[in-house]
Length: 499
Picture 1 (cartoon, one colour):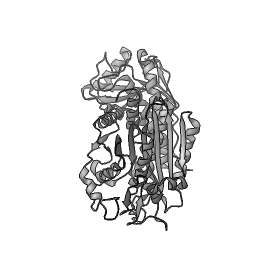
Picture 2: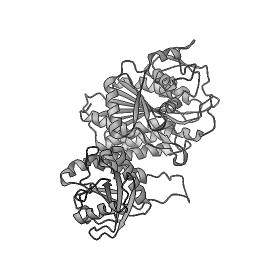
Picture 3: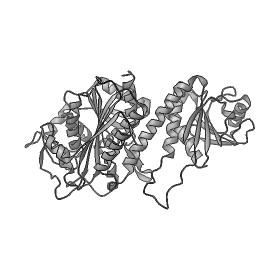
Picture 4: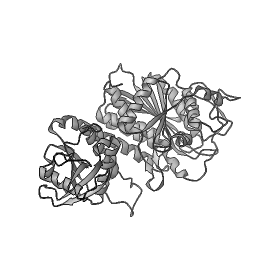
């Protein structure tokens, strides 16, 4: 799809369909989008006659309006202006795109000039609209043959904007498209089944980035190299599988040499059976998504490199397959982590924190400004916050504020959870420095975060538990690429001095 900004009057653009977002309380002289008086009157008269329902997300079609070049208008309701929010803008835009895709048009125009309001400025409209088109047209048909879904015929999309906002609007559009491509990468990796997405697959994806982008370099640590370093936690998780574990390290150097990097750490369990502590069979196929944290950090590198962000990043994807093989770790085993701390394995299904603890220790050698880790870590997080909101943990108040702002601005919901020090007592072991789980199941997401905190002392660090948000279940099963929008909002704020 080709996205462009146009300062041409919406009614004059040649396209198969013109989309007009319309507030419920629009007046004839102010139909939300800047249109000729005759077109505005047609719209408002249609509302008054009950021919148009402009509640938020409602779709209305008008045909053969002689004042418009486009043969049809899609009028999408925005609801009352006083009640309008950025979330409602997304609802309306996604409804409009869904309706368009059913018609299989090849070109559309979206009238945005004049829509800016307190809740959503023009740049935000552009970003939300581009993401809506990309999200609704995403398909993962790699393994389909005869039953593959029809590909959208939509080829060109024009956003009608004010002349004064073209330069800033283009930057916003470039950002939105780069973010969308990064999200597609995350979704593709997540949706790929585990027999095709192994630790080596993630390593190969990262290596391809190193070849594509001049400022990106990739290093992959082998089993032998990890043994030499003492990364026994990652090795322990992966030792029951025929697919060897990998620590994938991707550096993006877009900032000054003197600038400390932001470290991004992702859990990359390409399939999680639970190991010896095997999971119940229901929905176990979804455990292919247990590597979405690793996919997220790779997605961030791709977006940063595409946009040439003026920051330094180092992404570590801790990758393994957790299988109940003859060589698998067992409850009661004790391992020595890279940090030197020993851990008693009481449950092999608490493996994500094990691969993360070695990766968190390793990234300290880069002397990062901030460490952010992302993991589909605990079912307890889903119980706590459901499937709409990610949970994050940090003891750094400034970092917490920045991440909360990024969540709000990106509409990628996240909620700060408490790091309760007393939970460390629950991780005591009679035989090692730590146990990998507590003897009870209460507060499991907090317990896991407190475990990770033992490997981040002295660091500015935040942990994201994305078990409820990284993928959707049911008929619409698939990876969501969350929380990449939040992460990129934070990185852009950081890069341009809005910390």
